[in-house]
Length: 36
Image (tube, rainbow, N blue to C red; front, side, top):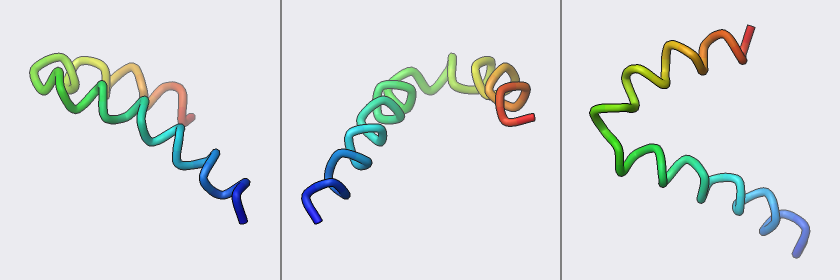
């Protein structure tokens, strides 16, 4: 069950993106390409 906590660490990276709200929009476009 501790392993699940490791997955949460990934969420921390998303938090950094949230701080840069203005840049998030631009990054979102590039992020979409990654999803594809």
